[in-house]
Amino acid sequence: MVPFTMLSIGFVQKSRHFQLLGYRCGACNTSSVGSDIQEIERIVTVAYKHYVSRIGKPPAPMTDDYRELVCQGNVWVLVLGAEITGLVVLKRESDYMLLDNVAVKPDHQGSGFGRQLIEFAEGRARQCGYDEIQLYTNALMHENLAMYARLGYQEFSRRRDSGFDRVFFRKSLPK
Image (cartoon, rainbow, N blue to C red):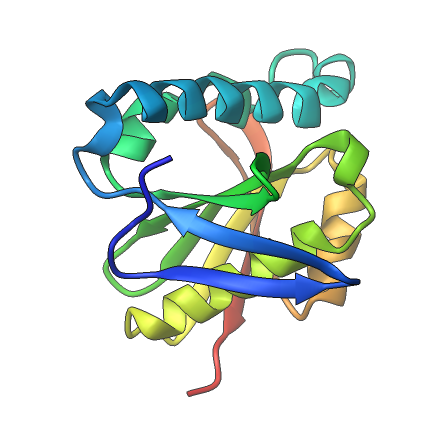
């Protein structure tokens, strides 16, 4: 794993130490990052596969190009011990940070790691100078709709986008 040079954060939660690591832009051509990309793709597949029958096709995160996202420096991984257990994809937009994807291995779901990844995304957005973070989810992912509302995200739009019925959320970030 090639840690992002600007930020590598260690956390302790429930007596477990974990880190959030990003990748340097252009680091995607090393063999160690290649195996990380395969693990990232595997985590996304197992985290989202149960939605395929509900939506009628693979959710958008299952079709993303993670090699490209890693090369662009948009992917942060949650590492527990030596194992990648989750990830978040962040994209800089002109006036907000887009939380494009958050995924946690199913055997670690319910442990608070997804919430930690979202909190990290919000902190990273503030660190990059944004006062707003946005995200979207599929309208049929009912559990996500409730979770984002509980985390303080406000729905601001519902529309068909890139072949999916999506619900768009935003959250103002305190300075």
